[in-house]
Length: 422
Ligand code: NIG
Ligand code: FE
Image (cartoon, rainbow, N blue to C red):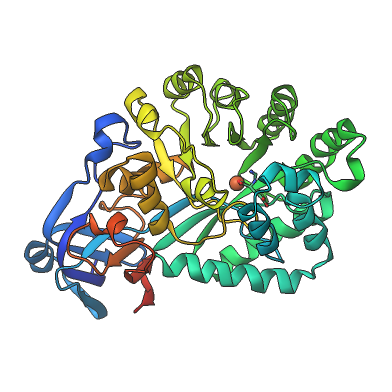
């Protein structure tokens, strides 16, 4: 006879429980469907969700294990733990001087081409001992978690040599083992051409293909391969070549595409069946159609446009109308977007890209899970899914974009354990 599972965690009296039950990804109008339960409750057994429904029914039908944690949400809002599908958290020095240069009128590309930007973070990372790098990264993971985020994608890309790319991916692997935040590793050796290869870029591309990709995949250090496909960085043909080699090596694909200019990166990502293409401020109409047809997720990063002082934001409304699965992310990195807060990204998505609160919440839960190819396990609160949960100090979920710039995550649960409580 099957043994009935007992609850190890019960959350009751939830004012609005956003289960996100239903299709993944959410496209078009379905991005507004939150599968909201009023007066909701959730029971968790170990790392998994056991039951979801009305508070009294969940309470009435589940047996509590000895020592079960019971949380009375007192009418607060509960969502799946947020998922941040695009971050660059492993770096040493911050770059506030560049931020100030931008405030004074220099552009991101001007700063990069004069030796700042990604290449300055590369020089710095190579010199920084692994232990220090790991401690700095850990602080960022703590902050991400405190803002209600329970899973992130984490990229390398500040090493740009085989050894230092591996150094970053090992830090991601090691922190994933000890930190409550779950990390999905992405190899980003094609983030820039490092200083020592500036006049022989083809040799750097060969190095990525012949040395880095085999080294990274041999030890299972990455699940995705990403590239900065942009004018002045890697062009379409170079991007196709590198990403084809990554696919052949068994990695799934992501792209930084059409961020600063329109180059056809969205189309390329779709044609290669990428899991996601990210940024997309300048994506063409053909690119939007290609992504919708391929089911490639668009990870939009309004915090980056904001922090670069840009006027034009990604065309979220056109993408949603065309049926592209839209996700949102912080792009947390020292250059173009230094924030660990998805709630502030939700505010920017509402104000600058005209997304509803419900669409933005779909974009950081079920659709962000889809952008990481993990929508069968996280991003929705349904029976059997991983118990990653955020409790928000508000009575209406629409407060998320509206009450901006403050942290309203009151409890965060990762794999059934309360990891943040405020
Ligand atoms: O996503 N665009 C490329 N990469 C990052 C910026 C990295 C940096 O400036 O250090 C981004 O915006
Ligand atoms: Fe990025």
